[in-house]
Length: 139
Image (tube, rainbow, N blue to C red; front, side):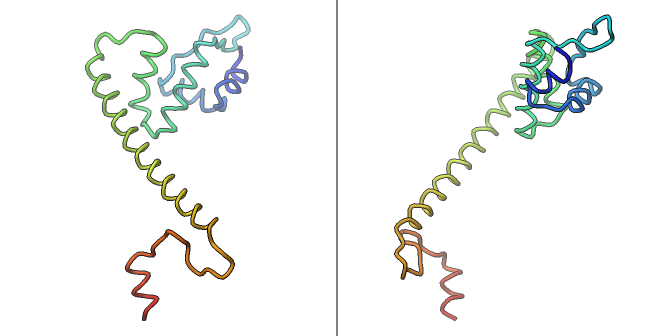
């Protein structure tokens, strides 16, 4: 497939793919006789992984070796550093997931309270204002 098709399949733009290749984050695909890049499903899988890692805000410097392993299936000399990087990244992801779960639970509680409100209610049932709000309201 060409770069446009690979871009569509990976939800990246062709410019992003070219940028990643230029920076050495992604291996450059072989070229056809016509000079066009030829991407395979393996390339698209690697592109999707790159997109996901970047959405997690991993810096390109950390993404490149991960993609190298994912694409080439070799880690040899960098196994130890990749183990540390993956462990650190998984810890960070777990922390972010925890924060997102807390935010979801908080929003869910607010929504539940809002749905219980009657027309005359001025405060949300089941939701207590923080002390700061009470102090300002009483002044």
